[in-house]
Image (cartoon, rainbow, N blue to C red; front, top):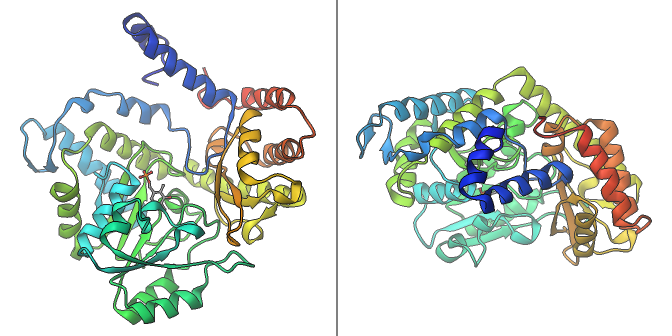
Length: 412
Ligand SMILES: *Cc1c(COP(=O)(O)O)cnc(C)c1O
């Protein structure tokens, strides 16, 4: 892979030993601790090669065949390939592969459909909505009038009755379905029905599950939503970036919303890496991977529940698990710190009942490493021991090292 081959590392080490040290240190951290952050993954060496390629040098404002710069004939082919692979993979009429991130994709979706001051209905931030779903600290909360729906405090499931009631009362211009922490499938048909009833656009922010969709392990929002926003770096396992999928009738508005409205020159190295990732995601091996991600998450969730954690919604349909560790006598923030010290890296998140922080974790990265159900049992047991403070972190760190040593993310 580009930054870690012996030769390239030698070049960097000679020219900039300080940076070489940082790159190798991070590779070592990723290889010797467990990456359980639900939004993270290990891209392939092919994706890293595209990212580290001379395409990074190319300026390419505009779209293939209609650029503001010369010399785009080769990068045009890369972007067309990325678009064709994305539309084929997700069954979409149109794809824009230029958004620099998931947030940029959401910004473009709003820019394509909304005007400042419009009302938008989205999952509230306290229930797993993303910053771009109306946080006062984000452009979305400043420029639009967000109304938040929630989840049932008991079941943790999206309160569909409330969604319908709020939609009827507020007549939003758009409804957003998508979350950073919801472990179950979204009922896209339900959201479509409500959007139709009140004359709203439906925006699916599928940043998390889009990789499962690619592998046939989660329902596809494309047939239901007017616009689907996504990231390319979560379960999908591509480069850090975003994309927008839509029907032919919104294609022009979406493209103008990305460039020139909200972005400048496209990052052609990232777009080439997205094309590589879409190609990988279309293989039977990736479909097997996506199903294994879910199988692993189910086993890990069940183990955590058996160990006494309160697993939100009682389990998961996806790669993502949220759980309250307080039954083991430790709050979410303390839990995250204690687990990190033991080499198990994950996040905190809001919980449905709202009075404490929980743990949020996912199985995308460990599954890429080749881990299966037995390793999930081991990780669940390890987490419980750490949370109950039954082992010192040095002992757990050693067990984590042994486990990651058997499943290196980048062998060799
Ligand atoms: C990850 C995520 C985003 C943002 O992606 P970035 O690349 O971090 O900007 C947006 N929405 C949802 C639901 C997400 O999970």
